[in-house]
Amino acid sequence: MKKISLSFITILILNSCASILNGERTSIKISSDNESEIVFKKDTLALNRKRGFINPIRSKETLTITVLKDSLKDNFYLKPKLSNLFWGNISFNYGLGILVDLSSDKRFTYKQNLHFVTDTIANKIILSNKKIAIMPKNKFLLYTSPLQFLDFFSIPMPTLGTEYFIKKNISLSAEYGFRNSNFRNSPHNISYLKGKASTYRFETKFYNNINLTNNVHLNEYLSLEFREIKSQYNDIISYRLEDNPNQDNYFTDDFATKKTVTIINLKYGLFVPIGKTFYLDFYSGFGVRIKNFNHINLEYDKSIHQIYYEDDIVFDFKEFKNYTQKSFLNYSLGFKFGIKL
Image (cartoon, rainbow, N blue to C red; front, side, top):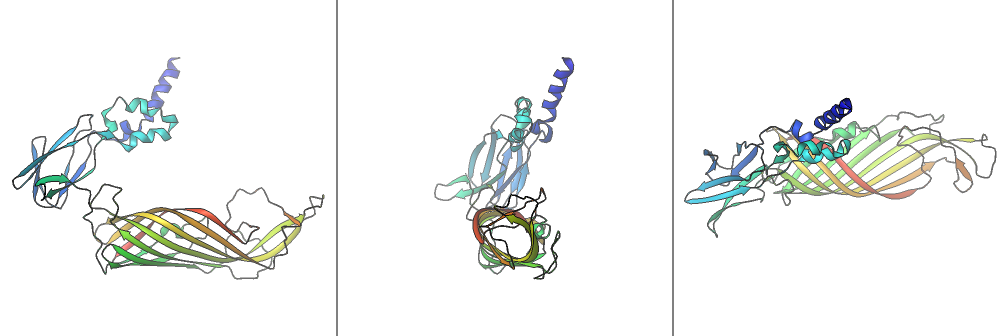
């Protein structure tokens, strides 16, 4: 019984995300629209639009921050909130780690980014969420999509894209990728087409009209994306007559396919600088995916034939579909790596 109890306690402790991964202190980034002084715990921090930091101890207590600007003085009160790691317990061992984290102040955090501005009408200092990050007109970016190159669930291919800002915070981008080789797992005996694939993407982005991160220094955007993936490949299927009781009497059919996938997405993204030269562009979105198939020299007829499916759990993007066009809900998640020119 003692061993069981000890094992249970060990499981609880090892799966308490906040207690293990959160430090005793948290970091709060603070900035201001002009020269100001931040008073916290009898310490004074001088800052301007360049951010400073304070490192309060995690606690259930409300923090008090005093901001001084010229002749103005205002107090701000930051209430504690449960950290993301505390809620992360839900996904591990049925949330048992929450029982441990509830006894620790490490479960708490505070708003991570504060930007103070002067309200000249009310003559007071306020906390602002209005973006101060700007993507300037005529800015030019060059990028690639690493996940496309490593997309072994579909058609891996290298891509190269550009993004140009036609106005402040508004950009147009274009991306192209190409693969000129046969695809893996091609058991066909006859080749009707040379295996190849290409993709292109056009996107319009609108930056800094949204602030889901509550960080005025981080560039966020909404975008409308149009993407198309074209591929052609040779393939083979086996089938039998639907009314034939002899299960072993199968026909083998070599054929070729021209496939087009059209994607239209509405996306949300984060532009994260890496130093002064490089950046990462993380994005996620929803839309529609339309698949079109044009089969060449295919003798299979779905009205009289039944396909033989092998017990193969390996994903194959060339898996035969007995329709010519179909629409699906599309979910997009990925990132781009680029350079600022």
